[in-house]
Length: 115
Length: 112
Image (cartoon, rainbow over all chains, first blue to last red; front, side, top):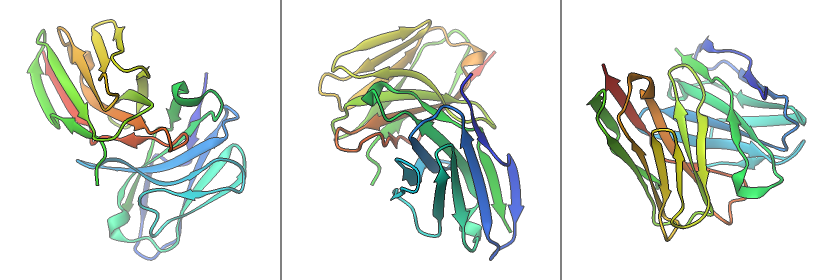
C-alpha cells in the first residue's frame, strides 16, 4: 500500500516563527511536490523536486524554501511565518518514469494556522 | 493566471440526480487527471485521460477528454450521498515534465 505521510495534521504557529513541514514517501519516487490549498484557488504549486538535492520553484515560492537531502523526504520551510501563510499544505510524489499516466499520490495534508 | 477553469465551483443536488462538471483551458494538455478529495484528506486520483476524444467510465462516473485536449468533463449519473466531495481536474502540459496544473475545484454536495 503506497504511502505519503506528513509530519503533522494540524499546526499552530506564531508570526515570525520558523516552521518545518516534513513529508515522507515510501514508493521510491523521484518527483516530490509541495502545494498549498486555499478555498476558491485550488492547489497551487510552491516547490517541487526531481531528485535528491534538486529543487525547482513552482508558482508561489515566495516566503518558502525546501530541502531534499534524501530521496524519500521533502521538507517545506517557512523561514518567518506570516498570517497569509495560513493554509492547507499538501505534499505529493510521483514516479518520473512512464510519463503522463503515472499516478500522483498525496499526503493527508497539514492545516497550518499562523497567529 | 488560472490555466484550468472548473465549473461550477459549487453544486448541491438531491440523491438520484445527474450532474456534469467542466474543466476548460486554452492550453493543450498531454494528459488530464480527475481527483476527488474528502474533508481532512489529500486528493485521490480517479482517472487519467490521455487521448483526444477519449471516454472513460468508472461505475456511475463518465470522464471525457476533448478532441483538442484542451477540456474535459466529469458526468455523474444518479448521484449518491457518498459522491459528496471536492472534485479537482489537473492537466499536464507537454513541456511541463511531471508538473500538474490544477483547477479551482468543484465542491459537490449530494443530499439524501
